[in-house]
Image 1: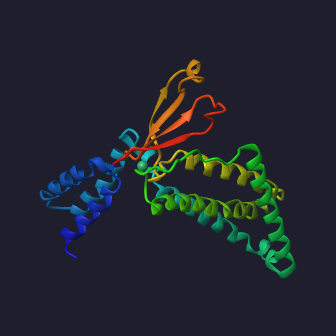
Image 2: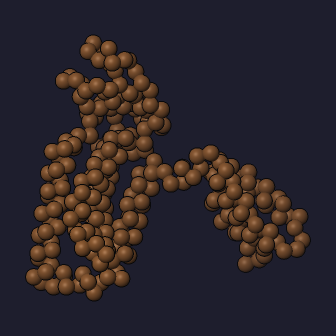
Image 3: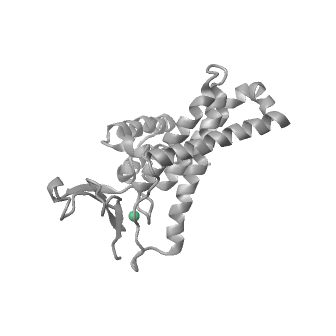
Length: 259
Ligand SMILES: [Zn+2]
């Protein structure tokens, strides 16, 4: 690798830290300045990381966007990271939980976990009925494959969330013997978050809906519409969320926009 290639690689790596809209200009500027550097070009290129980080920290909303779960892939990766993190926490205490996997212990442990899991689902259904809203079939709607992707995404979130409280309670056992008792509550609130997250997303691209607009007023909730409308940033449709649930309009309703 020539020194020129090496320095360009450093700059390209630093550019990852720069907010995407400004990345191309930033990289072009640094590459142009590099042409005039005769000595210590490596130190000059390493200084680009500091500049890129400064830009990232001082661009409004850049940090929030970096950790945003707007993209479904980012959401899944976040849950995978949590599974990996909680799994790594239990390894230092493997002598403690290893007896759980012996034949009688494993059976009792699995039954206790299953019992708590089912109770958590029942409590969730009783307190917050798991409704995702109305998504009526429409000729201008997406194909079966795209509609199926939405349910796979929901199932993936449920599956990934399930082991996190188990690993967490095992990791906390040495310092908090009552940790398994909080297992059920973490599941209840975790599953509630999964459903709320799903309701905030476009059923086609699975990105968060945006641009909430209040329509109507409380006095119009009988004969008119009163609530909030959100739109998909990619133009797939709009979601109407009733402001005051009534007997004829109690659930959010999605409307596809023809392409
Ligand atoms: Zn969309």
